[in-house]
Image 1 (cartoon, rainbow, N blue to C red):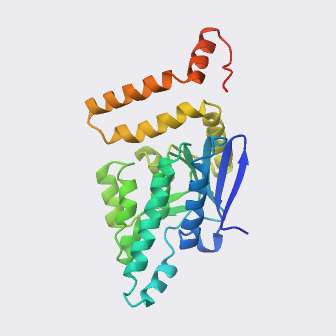
Image 2: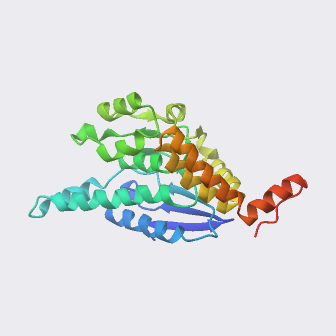
Image 3: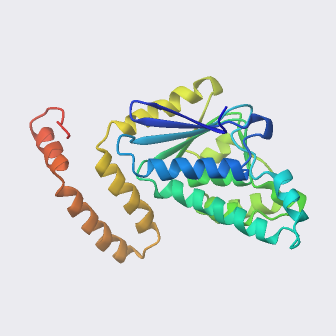
Length: 260
């Protein structure tokens, strides 16, 4: 079985991390598989939304600690190994946000350390209400510095810092309150809720969502006046697209758009 499985349905690609014996840890092999799919999906115009989930009893438990420890056998005691690992992980996390398609995390069990970072790096997230989240590297003497980047851009800073310094778990309902996930649902409804959201997004004009997703992340980092100037250019470009012309005309004529 592949360490990352992909199943496509109705313009939605479902990526399933398949290393349940390691709680879908972000091993070198898992990161390589995720990067490979990101590289394919970024040019796949037939896919309009992506779901990311884990097989087994957990979504993702973070980096593979045993694999990292084995890297210490090198002459430099693992430094080059660790530098390469976090470079590859950063590429995956940024790659998810740079995909033209919205990415939805379907989260169950636990999402800890880099697994929590993975959730925070997805555009949307739905979790089972019994799921737990944590950036608990501090419990073994390793501050979750790289997971902190995505986490602190999802939830208020004091709450993020508390999680990082205490290593405590956060419940799914609390994660929804703070904005790490969109909502928490009963476990039995998790797959259906996530699929419904993906299908709804996939029903929209892919070109519009693509330009909108890119603009969303770009404008977040800008001063407000610069953001308005930038997004004004983006929306004018969007308005000039033939399918947008058709969509607006269809609205006026009270019919479904005939998008090409």
